[in-house]
Length: 223
Image 1: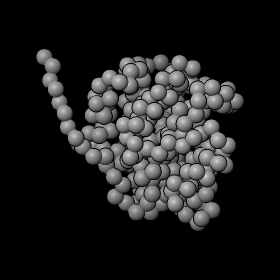
Image 2: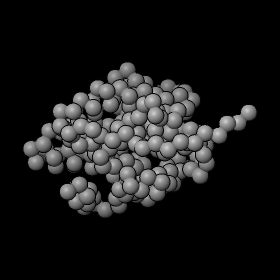
Image 3: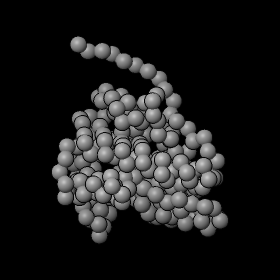
């Protein structure tokens, strides 16, 4: 028997004095570079900054996630998505919330928005389906029981598939499971869908520009 469930719920806002900034986008979009640039910018202004990322590469869960992403451990994609959420809970409790409470600026390479884009990719690859509603609840993204704090500013860096592939090919890191042409193509579609659905939450930035131009554009939106 099928049951139809609907609800409206707001995102969980940052109630603390600190500022939470996140960089989103596909692999190769420049998120890590811009995270570093923003952290350096605010430190240059005398601000206390916490630079971080999701998923983390260290810790009990982070180590497992990294091994799955680089193909050293095999597991169902659904299980991997739940590991992402587990790491995110610990990350918020151990790093993000304490920093925001202390009035620091948190600059993160990815946040919970990634769980929606990659979660749909892993389950159906169809961003027009209703699976996103299930993901909102099951991964505690918009659940009324536990919500992750939404960043005060989320910047999605937009680049073409060819640009992303070119940048990834120059990386020294091990190739990850999401870094192939077809998956990247679908993730580009996913971020486009996400930016439209949550237009008031996500600021799209042209990531094709040079590093300095992208940084200046982000800073302009912050001031």
